[in-house]
Image 1 (cartoon, rainbow, N blue to C red):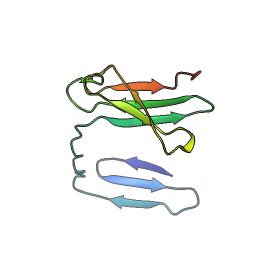
Image 2 (image 1 turned 90 degrees about the vertical axis):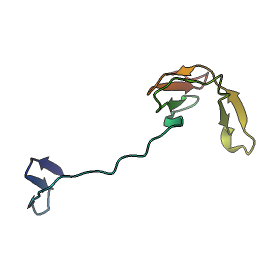
Image 3 (image 1 turned 180 degrees about the vertical axis):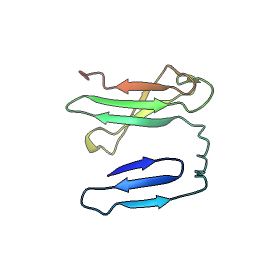
Length: 107
């Protein structure tokens, strides 16, 4: 499916479907996203073997010192019901990310 937008119309076409041309007026005003003030996991990659990565994002205007904040990663290995806690350190800059990886990762 392809879409083309101009100020006055949107044309949408799809193979095997009827073409529809609609004229629109007015403005689209999406609702503002709520402010986020906590670190969050922004990406997780699980490759083969030990190739596992976790990206943490800081959505705030200030750097976050992970060590001073006593942050840790809680990992449940291979379906275990007992977690292992790994303290993490470093500073995630304002509006920045930090990537953690398995120590045996090869990529």
